[in-house]
Image (cartoon, rainbow, N blue to C red; front, side, top):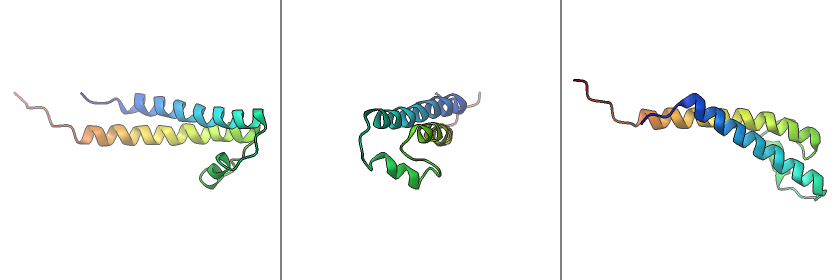
Length: 86
């Protein structure tokens, strides 16, 4: 069974984007000082632990998950055996 690369990319993009957004929003909401999420700033340019950073992280997370899902489906489909032609 082949994977639909667009569907997997979109699903992982939405999932990862929302995860970064919600994790950042939670840290901002409870006002917890910590450097755990701040390290994402090394990978996502312009990201910081703030409400603005949550939106920036949502965008970067979506693109990151989209590309990851597309690559994952492409690699998976590349290793599937070729169907026998009659």
